[in-house]
Each structure stands twice: as structure tokens, then as C-alpha cells.
Image (cartoon, rainbow, N blue to C red; front, side, top):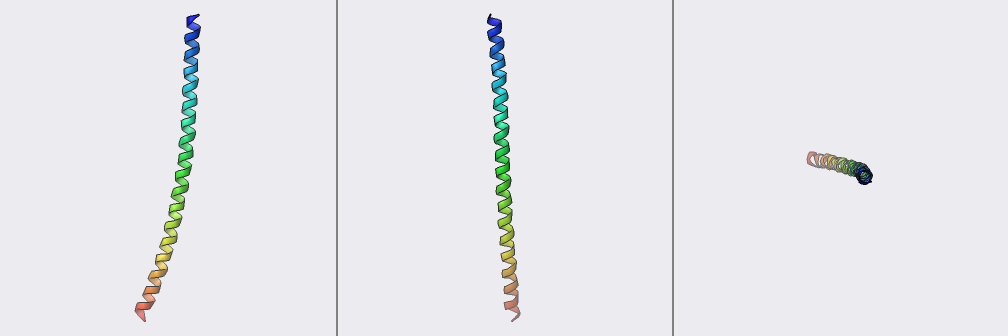
Amino acid sequence: MYERIIAKSEEDDGDFFKKLVKKNCKLKEERYKEMCGLIRRKNELLEEKLKQNQEIITLLGKLVKN
């Protein structure tokens, strides 16, 4: 009888750890996707800033020539 209880307990522990690992994997995947989105947005903002800076340099270059 005790052997069945111990075996059942070990199965429950195994299920618990499987569920825990699965949950952690999902959380890691969600965080990864979120970070990718944030990095993509940051890159877009940097590209926009670069474009603005290039326009400013062009305008300043025209002013200096005049």
C-alpha cells in the first residue's frame, strides 16, 4: 500500500515539474517576443532620428555654402 502511495507521489512530482517547465518555457517565449518587439521599436526610432539628423546636416551644409 505504501509503495503505491510513494509511486503516486513521484508521478505527481513528475507532473508538477513538467507543468512548471512548460510554464517557464511559455513565460520565456513571451518575454523573448516582447523584447524583440521593444528592440524593433527602438531600431525604428533610431532610424527616424538618423534621418532627421541627416536632414539637419544637409540644411546646415546649404547654409554654410551661402
